[in-house]
Length: 456
Image (cartoon, rainbow, N blue to C red; front, side):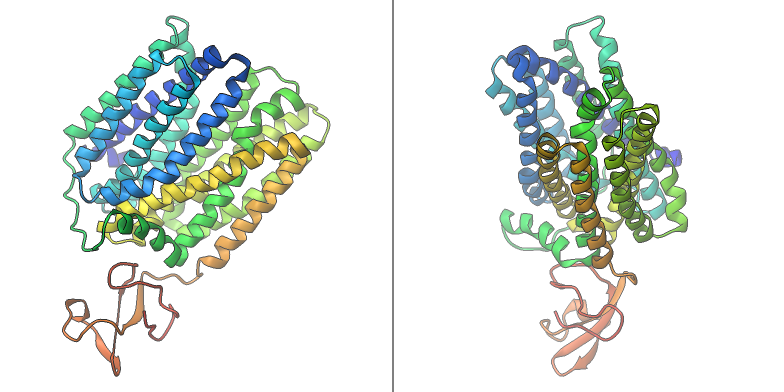
C-alpha cells in the first residue's frame, strides 16, 4: 500500500491531506470548548446546529464547486480553499457570539466542500494505474480513521500546556502547510471539458450522471445504508455509554475508538481483497452486514448492561466501522470507471453532496428516535433503513456490469468523429461498443447492457 508514496506528486498531496485533517481535528476539539464557553449548558444545541450547517454547506456548495473546477486551475482552487480555511481558523479565537460560530462554520465547511471533491478528482490522474489508485483510496481512508483516533489525543496533550485558543493556531498552521504542499506538487493538466452551458448546467450534470448510471445509483443507496448505521454510532454513542451502561466519559472515546479500529482494519485489508474480488461483491456484502449488526445493537441495548453486553457493543461498533469502510472506500473506483476524465470533478462533487444529504437525513433521525422511542427501537428502525438501502443497491447494480457496452446512436450525423468505428444498425442509426459513460454523446444508459443496441 505504501508503495504509492514513491510518486512525488501523490506523496505531497497525501501529506497535505494528512496535515489538513490534523488541523481539522484540532479545530473540532477547540470549537467544542469554545461553544461551551459561549453557550454553557446550551453548547450541545449549538454544536448540533453547527453540524446541520456543516451538512447543508456540503450538500449545497459541492456541486457548484465541481462546476467551477474546470474553469479554475485545480492547484489554484485547492490552494485558495486551504488559505480560506486558514483565515477562518485564525479568526475563531475572536468569536464571542453564537451566530458568529454558525457563520464561521458555514464558511469553513463551504471551503472544505470545494476542496475535497477537487482533491478526490485529481488523484485518479496522478495515479492512473488501478492498483495504485486502490492503494491510494485505502490510504486516504486510513488517514481519516487515524485522524479521528489521534487528533483528540493530540488536542488533550496540547491542552495540558496551552489554552484551547492555541488549537486554532494549530489548525491554521495545518491548512497553510497543506497549501504549501499543494503548491510544491506538479499536478497533471486537466483534460478539456466539451460540455456546454453555464455553471448551473455543469452543477446539474454531476447529479444527472449519478441518476443515469446504474452502479452510481447503487453507490448512493450504499451511502444511505452506511449513513443509517453510522448515525447511531456518532449521535448515540454518548447516550449508550453514559445513560445505558453508566460508564465514565472516558469510555465514550473507547467505543468510538472501536469503530475507528474496525474501519482501519478494513482499509488495510481492502487492496488485497479487491484484487481478488470485484467492487460489487465487496461493497454489497459489507452493506448487507450493516442491518444484521444493528439488529445485534438493538439486542445489546435492550439487555441488562452487564459485562458481556459492553464487550458486545464494542464488537458491534468495530463491525459497523469495518463494514462502512468496505462499503464506501472502493466508491472512488466506481466513480472513476463511470465518468470521463474531464467529468471527474463534477462526479466527485455530486457524490460528496448526495452522500452528505444521506447523513443530513440520518443524523437528526438517530437523535430524535433515541429521545422519543429509546435506543433498541432506534437501532431497529435504522437497521430497516440500512436493509432497504442495501437491497436497493443489490437491485440497482447489475450483476453483469461490463465497462464496454453495445449501443446505438440515432442523434448523430454520419461522419461525426464519435462514429468513426460504428456501423449502421438500421436506417438512421449507428451502432458500436466502447467504454460507456454518460457524457455529451450518451445521455442515458442503454436499455439492454447484455445484447443488442439501445437508442439514446
